[in-house]
Image 1 (cartoon, rainbow, N blue to C red):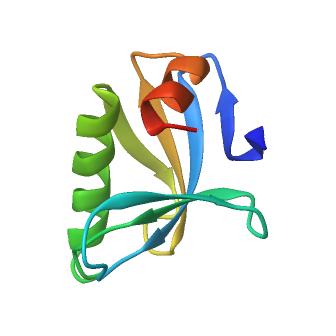
Image 2 (image 1 turned 135 degrees about the horizontal axis):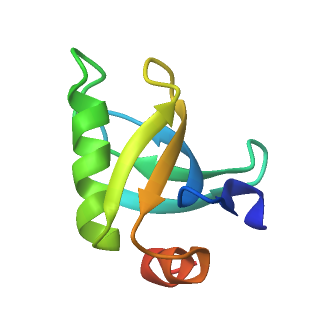
Length: 95
């Protein structure tokens, strides 16, 4: 269950699968097949709009600094969450 999240010396790595152009921004749950957290984002995947909205959405939800560390141009992304630990990330995501 926790393959999508890992605590490191820099912060928490959150492995996500992003679905752009959704009706609303929301956490969909764990995609067992990909081993990633599925996140729906309203913005289209054009000119970095979905990436910016993903970071803004998760930063607000987690009340922490979030940045993309891998997967800038794909749907599978690795995010770095700084300021809170793994257990708190899972709690705030409702997982």
